[in-house]
Image (cartoon, rainbow, N blue to C red):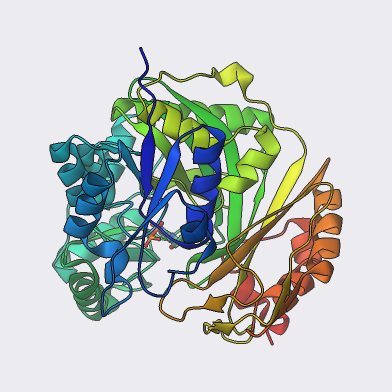
Length: 448
Ligand code: ADP
């Protein structure tokens, strides 16, 4: 039986659209793509087999108008839609609409997205599957009295987070009981305006934490993991540098077994990332599941040798997992620097035309980008211009290769983060691996 997709709609833009397109080509699947006005001349649109314009006054709407995207998939007779990351990738209503139309969503079922999109529910589900979570409330909290009783129990500091949260929006750290009144109101207000849902919850604030996440692939029944990525170098709770591996083989096997059990317990299908905080003692606390391909999946591809986007498409086609856990071996070390078009002093986006642009290549180097000389970097979308990765037999050689690669990269026309990345590659705490999520705050001298 031929159950393979004939044509897939890419409902995204930029580097991830190109990343997905390349894999569709490899697999002999036709690539269709939607696009707004700003992207009509972009590489993924020019390279796609079919391009479908959705012009909107607000450029974001070209990629967020659910009915327009569903209509595009129907008009273009696509078997499936690949959402990439961002935009509609975690929108349960969009997934439901595709399900109704008999079009495959490359990702988990709408019910699973709904469950995982609610941090309170996701925490409860993963706790039930045996994952360690930070102590906290199992229900939404709206009264300062209840919150401070709970905080007395679990100990200060605590953090208030939105149940529907994302992008670090609204989070409030609380050190004493009298701060709850104001902090709750603030978090609820932010949550309401950003997510249309003002439910918030309280959990233990993990001090000196590192961000460690596990890559998972599942077929609806069984799950395997591809090890971890270390992503503690962040600004505004968004990642700048990702690398792996980071843990001992024993710890990887231990947490890996837990995340697979967690994915299987919800009938997960597709690629997923299980995010954790790891405290000073090395203890893990589950944060959330990202039910989609992530920006940094590339790090895992370099150290395992598997094309994750291809595997995600294959399970969406209805194949069972084509690999077992024993097939996954980690080799060497990989680092990714996000080359955002931003000012290195304050991370303000820097849109504009690229007059000149040369990306490095060579042994152990990978650069995923939709940029080219003459490319007009729009101001209305994410500022990610390129993802630069290096591989080496160990961390030290991957870092050395990253310095070479950064020095070779030429971008003129916009500000970009290359100078910051270059300084980090020489910084002693970075080199020692002495890194927490406060790294950028604690190394302000690197900015500028
Ligand atoms: P979001 O979905 O909004 O990105 P996450 O739960 O994934 O929220 O957390 C994002 C970041 O916020 C973490 O990487 C960490 O920096 C911080 N954070 C979240 N929860 C805690 C916690 N309990 N203790 C310390 N920091 C936290």
